[in-house]
Amino acid sequence: MEDRQKIIIRRVKKKTHEGHHGGSWKVAYADFVTAMMAFFLLLWLLSMVAPEKRIALTEYFKSATLFREEKAQSGASILDKSSGVLEMGRAPKKQSYRMAPEEKTNAEELAKKMRASIEEHMQAMENQVFVDTTNEGVRIQIVDNEGSEIFRLGSDTPTQKARQIMRLVSENIREKPNRIAIEGHTDSAPFKGAQKTNWELSTSRASAARRELENNGIDPGRIARVVGYADQELLIADNPKDLRNRRISIILLQ
Image (tube, rainbow, N blue to C red; front, top):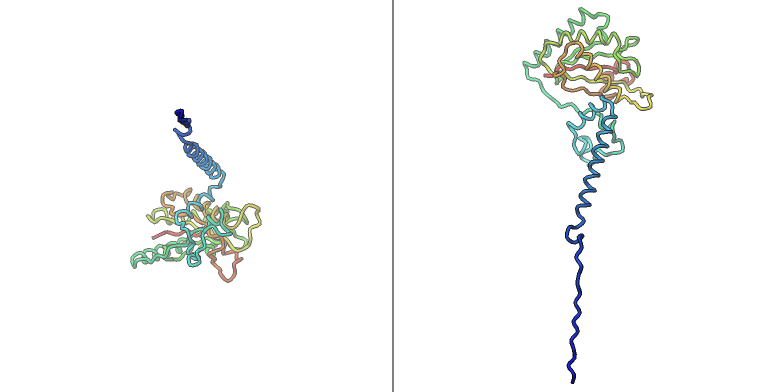
């Protein structure tokens, strides 16, 4: 028998650069480029936001949590149907604080001094300035009155009367060490501006009051917060559209 020749077939696999380096770097590079685009888009959007809205955003994120306090039981997240810039602009709930006896005494003495100064220098405006003490400290409220507004309707520019009152307030608190909170409030009448609501209006008015205090010698470093509450904390709760609900609160914090 003739010897049969064995046939051997060898398969050769060609190596490519793809096998050596892989394609994962392309995915990483695409992720990096996407992140950079998102970052610069965020910077551009922030540059377009008004200063008052940036203040509101800052205040929101200082106390932001995944769940709203009042909806924590149901698990509703902050991304509900009303979320957005206006939702973020809503001021956080005030923290409860109980003053020590000596602090309460000092606050009451300061409030008494403020009332006496207002009676002496501004008798005609006495019904537009209310001084009291709260758990936070001494609160001075400057309110609207019929024919005597502190801001024109829909405006965040203080009237001459408002500037006069804030000048007197500044003189009484300028030498005090207390930090200061400034709050803007509106009534419940809907704002008719196309791009503005009572949230923006109350916040911008609070910021305008801050500028007035600083122009009158109040150290900017003493400002603890500047927030707008819209119509959520009414002075005249029985009548949400009462003019006196439109006000500025200046609080000397204990």
